[in-house]
Amino acid sequence: MRESAQTTESRTVPPARPYPFSVPDRLVVDPTYGELRENEPMTRVKLPYGEEAWLATRYEDVRTVLGDVRFGRAPAVQRDEPRLTPRQQYSGMLTMDPPDHTRLRRLVAKAFTARRVEALRPRTQEIADELVDNMLRLGPPADLVEHVATPLPIQVICELLGVPYADRDRFHTWSEAIVSTTSLPLETIQEYLNNLWGYIGDLVAERRREPGIDDLLGALVRARDENQDRLSETELVELAAGLLAAGHETTVTQIPNFVYVLLHNPDQVARLRADPSLVPAAVEELLRYVPLGVGSSFARYAKEDVEVAGVLVRAGEPVLGSLSSANRDGTVFADPDRLDLDREQNPHLGFGHGVHHCVGAQLARMELQVAVATLVTRLPGLRLAVPEAELEWKRGMLVRGLLGMPVAW
Image (cartoon, rainbow, N blue to C red; front, side, top):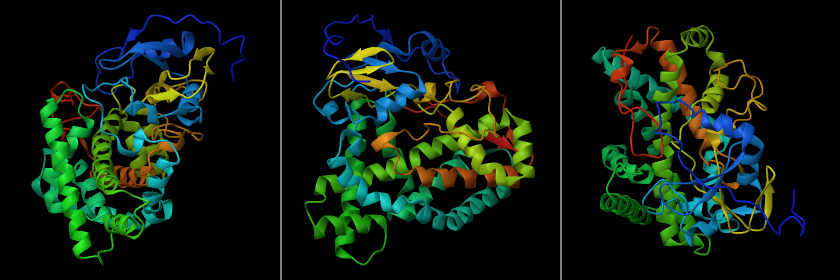
């Protein structure tokens, strides 16, 4: 609700809590979120870098912060944004508000519609089957991250965008700069970003020499060259680089995360194997259940005084919305801490909400569905090949995930 003049005159601001609240533990959601949802749904936090912020933890409030036009991302460019990274994070369209954000998003959104993505499913299934065939030839134990989770989304985004798959090791390495918090030195982050932008710049030049190539990168180059008001050269390069990196990095991480969770719920795996038609619903539940981020990022700034969960947020103040906490809100999801593949209503925020809702959500959904279905049906005895204590988890990154996942079958 909007504040009246009488209620905006004063307020009490609580001391800021250090955030994240704890060191990430595998895929466990910190219980502090549950306590805050119950007792202090809007709390003051201090991240490792940047200014203090409000943190929204309830589902309804997170949706408000992410979707209400009274909040925006653009002010972050001029502010010392609250963040998990030492440097201001490169985020492309995520630093824009409409109409600039709308202008860029329209250029790429049509490539990721449900219809276009569904047309990619047969090819994605071919790739998944080839990768599993190769893993079967090698025999157990095999690293699921290396042999399936990493190459599958990389090859799909390469074919969609028009990037040579042979270059995957280079740009996959450079993409870590976008999700690194402390895993890379600052100078290495900048070096990797420069390498990624330079690499895309070379591909852009190639499209101009061979304008008939039919891929998303070629379409973006034509949009730039036919009407330069739609897209600057810098926007073209950074947009394509962002699509390449974001188009594979999170899915590379989520495939083993999903398998890890399923292996801890063998009864659910048996159900999926017996009835693969349950896989789409299972993927939605896993998107809700699995906390991808180590903490909340990309604050929204209030454009005017706004009341959220009974707390007055002053114009100009940053607010973070916890997707992981919102997805465990018991007022929206019954028995929220249980993996429930029969959950009928599942309005999770796994891909965010509002104008910055993940543009590649449909692509990621399809890839995750193909990966899960292929692994559970073709590897009926799938299991960890090492004790869980030996699994290594990513550190110093914005995302949680396994560095490797040795499996047998």
